Image (cartoon, rainbow, N blue to C red; front, side, top):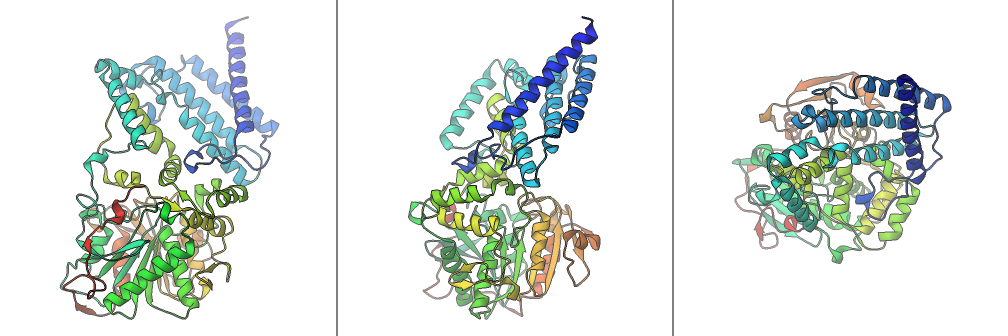
Length: 572
């Protein structure tokens, strides 16, 4: 047999091996696991998965051609690794064997993803297959294994094995703390160098502490401002550092600012429901801010899940013929759950029913499971990158306040979580008049006539920009929609002083049915959307009055401890 025939036979055998692996993987994809943190890569397609023979043949031929090209060039030329940051280090460049392994892996990955894209079936089935394949490919990358990672091997030699010893120590440390270290967490302390804006706790119950912040101006707007952050994580993403703190920005602009700081639920809150959180937290916070300030109306903001909760509270207030809210700002929040992005791969009737059986009547959704799920939405950046750095190379990740916050997880009460999944993510009932009953009231958000500022981030993978825009079709009042650059967090936390990114607004008073229709007439502006929002918010603040000299009001709402309070320091 000549060399070309030998090559062809070897390539066909290799291709057959990967084709067989693909089929076995599809057939064995399991049902959703007990722990949501382990769900990455394991969602089962809900319909039979197959490829058309024509498409499979096309992919096979392309694979053979590319494999032949790799063999012809010696798999990979030394000094020219694949254009992937996992393989861009000096060790990969200098080691021809490592470059060959990386090149072969990248070819296999391209082929597997092409096969995932070619799966026949509905869109959700294809999304689930693609997600599972992405997770599998991320996990089996040669960069994740010391036997193949040339960079880690070089470092072990250069340090005479010290990097391996440090890597083992790092792994043992992370096993004790229960999660992979994304940053040097020892460098941060809530209240010392994150969440440092000056203020005090002026009210608390079993669900939340209400923080009031010290004015930075002689006069403030007569209508105070209340922020409702997501209870799925800690509020201080809005107050990381003085230079990027949305809370400090509000205070500096003359708004008397209050923030809900959620309690980190323990077993004593294992039966808390969605209604409990709306009645005893969001509505209670609105009422308390009114009492403290003496204002007839207040301005409000809901971020992410906090925006969904605020929208529910506004629906309850409307049903009760009460109007304590002068305006509402929704930041990367879902009200219409038609477009839910990558999270949709997790949601179906079986999964939601499982969660209802597991914790619908009581229990906790563990914070670490939630944190792991969100990390696996970007596995190379938020999981395997740290496995390689921490364990294979023995590195300590640099201090980064955002990643410290990201690792500071929170639990959720099971009944709250199961009800949220069923009524919003699965059945999308919030936009239906009377579709949900909350706190004894049938909600109709189409009657919530409150001025709104609605913000979405262009690259948001948690709340897709189309999902954020959909709120403009729900609420009937005056609205302003703004799109910012970047993602779910970086797009929101974009202070004007940085002069980074840009935002888009539309001059028209009407909102097309689709986001694409809105975008066609939108205009890009450089810098932060905060400036645009501040101007809008000033129009709803009312007149200027003397800033208060003390926190709270009287003995009922007196300062009990300095901000950021004790609830935010509770660990999951």
